[in-house]
Length: 445
Image 1 (tube, one colour):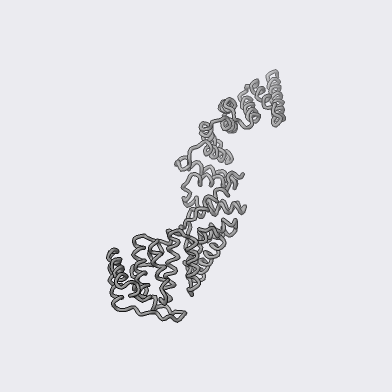
Image 2: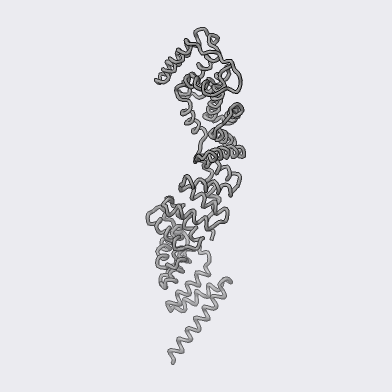
């Protein structure tokens, strides 16, 4: 009994990648830039040996003092003062008064000021001026190139961000996992999913090799990319890993539907049930899906309990369809007394007569023959009954049990006009005739 299209639901759920490159880059830049632009530049020069020989010009004391003054103003959030000091340094004697390393530090601090004002375009231009200077320390050039790539991502200029990042990869010795994720995000935004997947998997594997836990967003990006490639098995593998370290409702629900894509019905049910028993399924649509899975797994009593609880606490919308599901579950569970009120609600909310005909059938099961007659007649009068012939067979049975034999005969004859019910209608008429003959014989005897 396949009652829902898991692929449609899963695509809607899996397409939402909870990872936005621009927002992530803003956070990383805020963490990475700091305010100590000058100190950082000097630390970079001392901490990492260069791979090529560069004769970096000296940072003269009077220039250093001015830079330190501007930096102090920036630390105090007096950005106008900091910018004014830098302007004076440029204006007094022009750019030629500063050597390349001094000028690189001026542009580096300008960039920080522009970034603090959220003027990313000017910040980007200032950082490009930093790397345009000859003979700056290699570490300063490498780190600035990485920042340039980040700023392109912040401005959602994905291709330029990718290109800048590839330049950075070409000159750095040991790129970290975050850099591969950043590149993956760029490829994701340009819809080059193969390269995006290659890079995010590289980052995940780097963390695993170092016995570190890969970030949730990395797994999510990999999960999305595998799904886009229609690689269901790999999508499932990533979701299973996500659940090991980040057990959340959305991953249990997604995994359940992906197991459905693999035709693993028992695992599909188990995954969804795991979320349900932990009270994670707070949406009515999720609870209805849970009920369907129980029905598919031939556990109708649990399906009925899910629907009953959801309808009572109003987490499941009280529609005709949802009451119909509850009634069907109770009936399959042989709980006729509970199926009746649920189907009564379903029929009352319906626009046609189909559910009244089905309600009559349940009344018949519960030996409530008067109510069965009323419900089926109401359904036939309304119209929209899918199998009027079957409804009239049930109506005939109800009339027969109420000893209204003439009406029973009329109902059976009407049902017999449809070839699908002709045989059963004829058998019921024969049975009724033999029963009437038996009753006459008893009376005469």
